[in-house]
Length: 527
Image 1 (cartoon, rainbow, N blue to C red):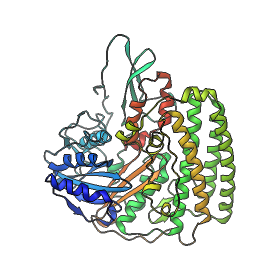
Image 2 (image 1 turned 90 degrees about the horizontal axis):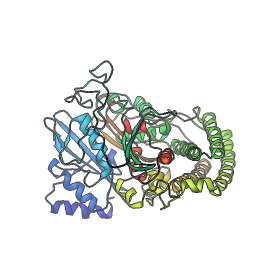
Image 3 (image 1 turned 90 degrees about the vertical axis):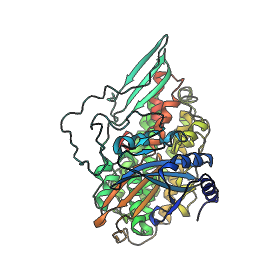
Image 4 (image 1 turned 60 degrees about the horizontal axis):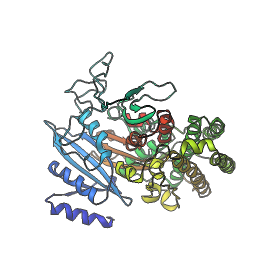
């Protein structure tokens, strides 16, 4: 069923001379698919913004003579999946970035890997292209080999034009891409006066793995395994989103028991990461007691996941058509006892955290992201919910099994690190309650449905609320039931730009804790 605002937007676009045609693809549901000409792409972006739609993603694909560009929008839990095409020889398309700043880096990603020129884009610098390919080479076009054409060491990327600031007392601090800790690579360029940060610019892409390219021609099981490695700390949610997209394209119905088990694993993934993040935020301001306590709880939780599902991160347990691991009655009893213990310990530790003057001094009013900026950037997950943005797929566009559950969504408006920490703590409580309900209502039956080979060209859209927020996965099948196109959008893509803004006016020593409070995935961003 179309949302109430859809007809109004449709009529407004028709009034501007935009010709829309419906895209009939059952696998795109719950999104409404529309196609339009490339000349009208900018008008769509302007009207979508005026009608209050949120930008969710954009991606492209090579269809032979043309390049097809997609964009996904959302409002009130309803989605519109729009597409257009441009000629492969000289592809030019109006940019959506003027209306949606969150489209900036995704459009530059398309520019680098497909050669699409976004005619009025405010930033023409390369983004994913780190000197690994020649200017006329576009790795996601079909004529480019997955193994690449340039063996040997990639030239240093020393020519990237960072933003420049100057004046009395202004100095620059380059940080990374190699860091002192065991984290992924990313470069941060600060301009500061004294200890105060004037500007921060991120340079990512150092862990570009070619996920989209190597997905081509994979079978369904192989793609699920690949999706589980888009971002290792989100292996369950990314695998679920990819499998959901494939299942919708193929018309496969997942057994009820498998649906519940997927949700249990996704909630366990959320709890594990939130426990680790709360401890790490406290550690960044030298509150070691909380770091050790939350790290202990996370380790116990991961060991319990390993005992229940055979892997501490539950990697490769979500498979096309279902799950690869069940849950015994004894394990259900142990998991319920474990949740009761965890809930009591987290409540006790959070009382200590809330009464700590050290945490109050370092976290309250630090790294503030206003609700207005969070909405403008299209931020997601705990970053958005700490800044007044309540969207949660499990609540606003619920998919099975959340469509029969009540999902509480904690929301704050302060937008500082303290708020992001509190959202995490409360989401642990919510996830524990959801797991208890899912265990109590766990249906019997098979763990995996028989697979149906989809027709050539079948498309599917996967939408899953991972622990960082909304995950988007698009899949299109080619012949022999193999993957022709796979695009995953990690929520980090929408949240990384927020770090550049929330650090303004803070002191340089607070950058690590600001960064940890956002905790974007480098791997999920770089693909």
